[in-house]
Each structure stands twice: as structure tokens, then as C-alpha cells.
Amino acid sequence: MWREDLGRVEILVKDLIESGMDHVEISVDSPLDIELEDLKSMVRTIARVGIGFGVHLPWRELFPASPVEEVRSSSTAVIARTIDQLARFEPSYFVIHGASDQWVCSKHEDLCLASLKKSLEELSRVSDRIVIETIQGSCCGRVSQISKILGDLPWLKICIDLAHVAVENLVRGKGRWPSTISEAIPEVPTDLWRRALVIHLHGLRNWDKRPRSHYNFSQTPLGAEDIARIARIWGVGYIVFEVFYRSSGGSPEPRDLYEEVRRIRTWLSILG
Image (cartoon, rainbow, N blue to C red):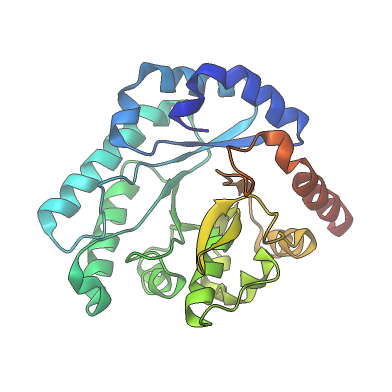
């Protein structure tokens, strides 16, 4: 849920529950969103219903992995302010994108990773519920990059976005399209899945031979049994459907994901 859902929060929560879900992730895409008093009203409504929720921290124009100190420190300060304003509602976690947009990232990623580590250490003093997400396309969110900083941040948890990992595989595999999103599971290193708290799930769409993420699963099936199995093995606390688009057009509703939720719940029950 995000700012565009402000006018239908109670209806959406009802639909989520009826679709078999018991957790929601609130996305604060932009630092400006937190200035909306209605966003805090959304949080209160969700908390009052009694379902769990996490927060996706802002990412637009924010680069906590920037090797430019002024950019890094300013980005981290904005993110910290967002955490501070929402911490009193006790979300289960705060998801962050560890990103930088500097040209040096492709050749000297250690500079960016050092900046990211510094930002995460600063944010850990604001909250002990920071979760870094595996993202595609920008430093420093690839699984190989996040693995490099885990040893120095033993408290850090991971949000594994399997569709983002699948896109990494597509690039390396020169366009070999996955038969299911769960095909990306073997690409997640042991040191990451041992820290996994959240899994993000969404489908891919082939758009002019380029993968587009955050779609439903009509073009790339989920692989529910495998997802449920690794959720048990990894000890994951939360599975979030980060689906923004229907392949046929328009925005999805919670009921569109009823079958995927049902299959995962069935397999989780079977696996015990």
C-alpha cells in the first residue's frame, strides 16, 4: 500500500484479509510522502485492525551508498527522519534500498559499499529493525554486493526480492527467461538467506525483449511449492506480494492474488 491508497484504506485491508493475507507493507516512496498526515492515518487504521505491517523506506532521490559524502549523509538523514516518525507505530521492519548512482560504482564498488555500510551503521542507531533489499540495476543492491558487507554488520537482516534476483540471472544468462520466479532461489547465497526476514514476490513481463518487474504472475508463474519450502528453510517471517501491475493492464486488487496466496499457505501447512 502507498499514498495512492489513502482514500480506500479500510476497503483494501478488508480485501487483503478476505484474500488470505495477514500482513501489509506500506511504501513511503518519496520523502515527501511522510509529510502527509493521512499516511499516518493509514498506519493507525492498519494497526487498529490488528494485522502486521512493515515499512518500505523512501528511495526516490536518496542514495545511502553514494561515495559523495554530502549526498550519502543527507540521504541517510532523510531516511532516519522517516524511521523516527513511524517508529512509534512499531512496524515489524524497515526496508531500505542500498543504492548509488555515481559512475564509479561499476568499477570501484568497494567505495560505494563502504558508504553503504557507514549509512547502515548510522541507521542502526535509530532502529534495530533495518532490512536491506536485493535490488536490480543499481549499486549496491545485488546479492554479490550485499554479501560483502554482512560480516561487518551482524545485526543486519535481508529482504530477498526473488524477481529482482531473477532479472540479474536474465542479464547474465543473456535473455534466458525463467519458467518460474522460484528458479532464482539457487542464486541466493547462503550468507544472505541465513539473514532473510522478508521475501518480496512479483512476476516479470517480457517487454520488447526487456524484463519488466512488479507484474502479476500471468507471464512468469510463481512456483508456490518451492517458495513455501525455502520460506520454511530460511526461517522467513514475512512474504510480501509486491505486485503493482496486471499484464493485461491496470492495477491489481488483493483478490487477484488469491490463488497464489492459497497455494503458498497450503504448502506451508503441508510442510509444517
